[in-house]
Amino acid sequence: MMTLPSNASESRVVRRDGVDYASSVISRREAGGHVDLPKSGISLQPTVRISPVEAVKRLGTGSQPWFSESVYVSINKKVEFRFQGRVHLLVLYNEGARKNGETSIGDLQTSCLRNLTHKLTFVPAGCVYREWYETGTTVRMTFLYLDPSTFRNSDDVENCRHPRIHFEDASVWDTASKLKNVIEGGRAGCAPYLEALSGVLGHELSRVDREILGESGVSRGGLAGWQERAVVRYIEEHLGEQFSLLKLSEIAQLSLHHFCRAFKQSFGMPAHRYQVCRRMEVAKGLLADRTTSVTEIALSLGYAQTSSFSSAFRKTTGWTPTAYRRQFKYVSTVQGNF
Image (cartoon, rainbow, N blue to C red; front, side, top):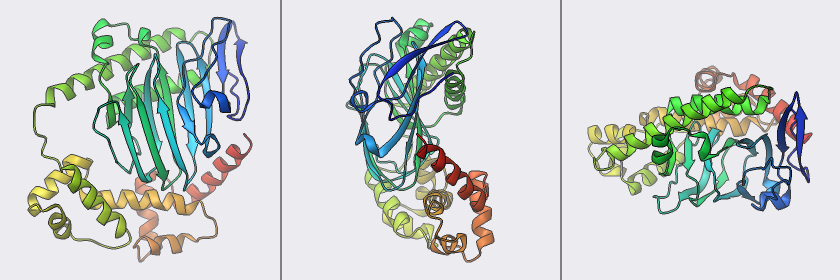
């Protein structure tokens, strides 16, 4: 299947192996949310508005009713996303972290989460989605536009009406990733598989929705908003240092035992592991600068030995720092050709 670069000025329908595919990458006008629907009957879904448009690289692939966009934002960029459409939007945060920012959907409580890697955000059709941030590392994310008609089960359609911000669910992630890959592959005869995956994804989103509604009246024992902000601020300011859990519990004004339990409930991991993950996210951004050696990066993040840093980086990302740097150079070269 043919895909077009994000600075292309037009959308077109490509016919291959007897199947029509709307292959599009968003022009400046389309990036503002104004998309003209082709008269051929193959219509592109409304897309996320991104500003400033020059801050990102975005590549869209698919046809009605399945469309996917891959979005790449480099480090130290300020960017805003807005969306309100007749289709559902599922955001997959493949990797990245922000220095500052907020995510909101309608009247749902705003999220200021910084580490976005492997998080999901679901925007039901008609809801207003807004997200802005200043990137602390490179950010890769996927927008999946989901026509409600592809959720064939009436219960799934009914239950997928509640927005969710920065949640985690392995089943939703795996199914959405498969759907994205099939859309991008554009293989002839894949419509039945797309329909099946869409049905499964609708069921998984409906399941998560029911679980959240079932827990809405129960205290989950996590940190309060002000406690999360205060603790995260301290960790960020001391990222290259070793901190004590006792100090964090004092900041949160909780007992040590209660703090450890509440932190894990809020962030899905213990505090020390959270610090390591944040270090690795910062390291990814630093590795983009080839003038800084791996040893210098390790020392700046509190590792006395380069081998300890390399081991932690590989355990977290699956790459050695040197291999990641080579891969980053390759990705930058590819993006530069768009």
